[in-house]
Amino acid sequence: MAKTPRSSVDETARAVSAFFQEILAAGSGPPTSFNGEEREAISVRQFVHFLAHYRVLSTDFTHMHAVQIFLKSTDTDSDGLLFLAGFKSALTSVGMFLREALSTRRMSAAGPNVEEIMIGSTQKKSHDQLALEELTQDINSRRDFTVDQTAQSMLSPLYDVDVIRAAYSYADMLRGLY
Image (cartoon, rainbow, N blue to C red; front, side, top):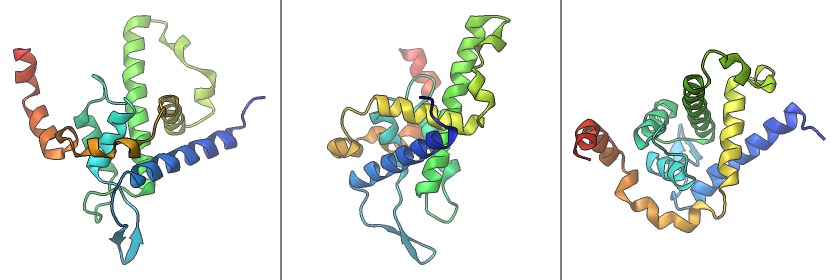
């Protein structure tokens, strides 16, 4: 039985909320006060750790890309924290980025008949929603254990914004060495 578009959207929303709660359970601390209201939020370190944990980071989508998307998705008054709506927006941006990277690879491999690659359902849904659905399905396929079981690894310098920025500022030099 085929899924209705509405149930697909609901499944994606539940998955995004579950990911967000999973990150919070990994030890984000108390809720954050925002405009006089206490709300739960995640930091850039938690976001990058989440993406690394579920193997979303790759040569196409690096730590630096994750930091840039995080910073674009944060509320300007929230001191660099993502609330649930911002987290969904960030995941959508990650999905769009990955779809674009895949599309670019396919275009170079497919030659002139690129139009044949397009899936019929793509035209029925928004590209943003489809990208988010694909990303959540990909992450769900890798969920053999939850983020909170590896919360200690979040303290690694690999997820520190300053370390990520410094490493990528010397990326070309490091590539030349190796």
